[in-house]
Amino acid sequence: MANKSRTEIQAWKQQLVHQAEIKLQALTTSTNFKAYLKTMAKFHHYSLRNINLIYAQDPQATQVAGFKQWQKDFSRQVTKGAEAIRIAAPITKRLTPEQQRQLGTKRDQAIVGYRYLPVFDVRHTTGKQIPQTQDFIKPELGEHANVTPLYQAFKTYLNETTNLTVTERPMTENQARGYFAPQTNEIVIDSQELDQGMRLKTLYHEYAHSQLHGLTSAFKDRPRGYQEAQAEAVAYVAMQNIGIDTGDYSLGYVATWAKDQTVIHQA
Image (cartoon, rainbow, N blue to C red; front, side, top):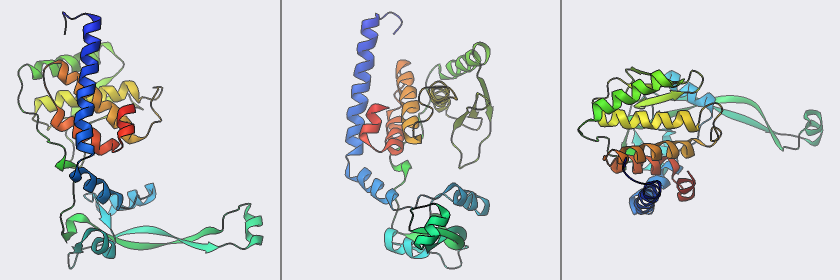
C-alpha cells in the first residue's frame, strides 16, 4: 500500500470492512451459529465471587451447570463419581413494610445468607455435543514468508519507541495467546505459540487493546465483547495489509465475542 494515494487507501479500507461485514453476516445468521448462541444463553452467568470459587476448586473448568440442568437444558449426563464444584446461592427473605423502612429499601426481598450448591464441569458429562467457539474459529494461520522478521520488528519498535513493554512468556492451556495489562502497560505474548503468523496477529490484537482500551482510552468502559471485536478487527485489517487473510480465525472470533450484529458493526 506504500505507493497508494490517501484516497485509494481509504477506498481499500472501506472495501475491506464491507467484505468482512458480508462474511460476518453470513456467519451470524447461519443455523449453526444460531444454535451456538441458543446453547450459550442457557449457561448461568456467575458472579465474580462464584467465578473465583469455581477457579479455586477446579482451574480447568470451562462450562458448569447443575446435575438436573445438564439433563434438561443440554441433554447430557453427569458422569458417575464426578466431583462437584460448590458455588454460593443466595437465601432470600421477604421483607415486611417495617423491615423495608428500617433498611431504607423498597425491595420486596433481601439476602439473609448463602447455601452452597453443586455444579459440574462439562468435561465430567457425556451426551449431546455442545457447540464451541472452536467450531467457528480455525486456530492455525499457517506459515507465511517474512512473518517472523515482521513480528520481531514490530515488537522492537514498541519496546524502543513507545511506553509499552512487550514480553513473551509461556501461558497455560486455558489462557489466551496473549494479553494487555493496562495497569503496567505491558503486552504479553505466549512464548509457546509456534505459529508465527498467529504471534504477529496476536501482537496487533493486543496493541489495539493498548490504544483503544487503556486506562485513559476512549473505549475503556465498553463491554468485553465490544472491545474484543474492535481489537480483532484491527488485527484482521493489519494482517490483510501484509497480504495474510486471517478471516477464518478473526471473523469467527469477532462473531463469538460480539454475537450481536449491531455491536459488531459499531465496533
